[in-house]
Structure formats: C-alpha cells, structure tokens
Image (cartoon, rainbow, N blue to C red; front, side, top):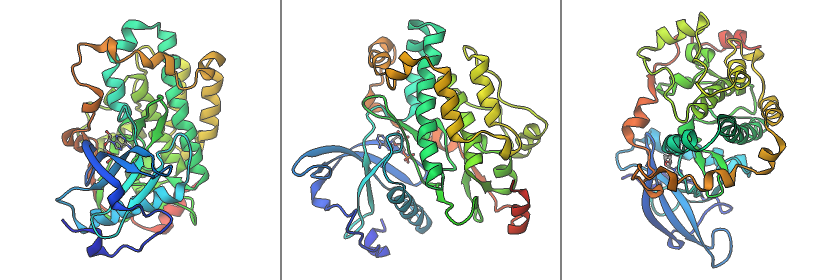
Length: 355
Ligand code: AMP
C-alpha cells in the first residue's frame, strides 16, 4: 500500500493528530476507493478524553488518483468548517504512514440503510401524517446543511441518501465529500476528467455538459427527498442507459409521486427538478418552505428524537444490528456510472449555458 510518506504530504499542524493516540476498530463501510472504520481517539476533542470517531482511509488496491481524491476530500472538509448538519473533520494523520481522515462518528450509519431498516416501523406504527412530518424533519436538516455548504461556495456533486449519515441523536450529517469542489472563483465546476458519476442523481446540465453548480445540487436534493419519502426507494429502477434518461428528462419525464407523500411535498420535489437551473429554488427557500410545512411541535421536537428512539425494537424481523450497518461495494457500484470527458468540453459553451 502506498502511504502518505510516499506522497510526502505537507504537515498541517492545525489538523495533524498523533497516530499513537488513535486506535482503529471495526469496519463501518466503504466507497469506491475509501474504507471507513470506527476508532477511538484520545484527546481529540478534550484532553485525556476518549472519543469514538470514524476514520477514512484508502483501500489496499488504490491508485495514485485515489490518493489525490482523498487528499482533496480532506482539504474540502478542512475548509468547510463546522455546521450541525455537515460531517465535521476532527483531525488527520498525514505523516509516517497511511493517510487517515478522522471525523465525527455517526452511530446509525447512512440514511439509506437507516430508512430501509425502518420501513416496517414507520408504516405500521404511525399515521401517514406523522410519518411524513418526521421524514420532512430529515429533509429540513439536509436543506440546512446544504444552505451552509452553498454559503461556503461548495458544490457537493454527490448528494444522495447513501451519503447522509445519521448520528446518535438522529441529527443528519451531510458526508462523503469525495466529489465536492470549491467554486470560489466561478459559480460552477466543470468536470474535465473521466470518472464514475452518480447519474441518476444528476441534473440534466450535469449529465449533458458535466456542469455542476449549487442548482445541480438542488436537483440531486429533489432525488434525495424522493428517497426519503419512499424510505430508501431506488430511483429509476429500470435505468439502463444515460442517453435515454437525458432524453426522457428533457421531454418532461420525472420520478412519480411516492405513495403516502402529500402533493405539497411532491411539488417541492418537482420544483427541484425544473429543467432550467435558474428556475429551481435555492436551499434557503427550500428550508423555509419545509419549516412552513411542519407544525411547530414537530420542529420543536428537533430531529424527531422521541419518534425514532423506539424504532429499533419494532423491527425485530430484521436481524441486522446497527453495528452491522455497512455499505456493500455492489450497492455502491450500482449508484455510479463511468463518465467520459464531456464531448462539448469547452469553457465558452459552458458559459453560454449559465443563467
Ligand atoms: P464514504 O466512503 O464516506 O461514502 O463512506 C462509506 C460508508 O461508511 C457510509 O455509507 C457509511 O455507512 C459508513 N460511514 C462513513 N462515514 C461514517 C461515519 N462518520 N460514521 C459512521 N459510519 C460512517
């Protein structure tokens, strides 16, 4: 395994954490090139106090470009700063061994698994209204996290339920900044290299011109909202080729209204899926709209802690325990499609597409 030593990463004293104070534990999940394990870090938040953390590192089979991507993810995380609904980096080990990124630990793993596991609980134990309100508190948290990222000029590019984490008090954290880019100097990020992309979550302009903006994140947020309301449904299950998806979207085809989803919530999704990016709402107005849709007692309950806290026992037919929450590679792979560099890879043409 190539280590950070081979790559001679510069020391960033503000973030460097001593390896000897970190113990690695069980496997939590994995993405295309990274593996995440649970860990314990002594003194990372408070002197002499042990904190449970998550540690992201490269898989043994990684390439040089995977290493570059992980370094980029680390730098984006460091730049973003702290927000309740964004996964916080706590430290990094960059010297004398493999690169390790230490983040907050999210007890309930990713949102996709969380929702799928509670499918039975939510439909059998609650009224439709309560179920929807509870799910909308999740949507609201993601909107607030995205509002913050937008204010930091960060385009996430991979907003999906699999990349949202659920922490111990049912607070949602936007995670997986592997594709995220800072767009400080321009309002968009234009992907120029080959790579695997989450096509079913991508806006039309991202599919056709590899053009990513805060508004293409809004489109993805609409798909994520659909995933939430379907409790982990698979968008476009019959998807086979990207060309057909682009054609269908252009002619107005959209994901259908989920059952048990109010027209108001579905309308919000449809607003996010406006073909023209400038017609889509921004994250502040999405958060505002969700607040208006939720009764104040639900908002006060903050993240519906009372609602979810009993949800584990009620799903006794599911033998998987929380600790077994891990994303499988095949599930991960089915969410991404290899992209070619855009055929119209031309900055002027991209500029013409901008509002
Ligand atoms: P990632 O490569 O960041 O997409 O992470 C892959 C999987 O690892 C996620 O889908 C989660 O199941 C798990 N995971 C990642 N980060 C954390 C974390 N901070 N706490 C708990 N589980 C995590």
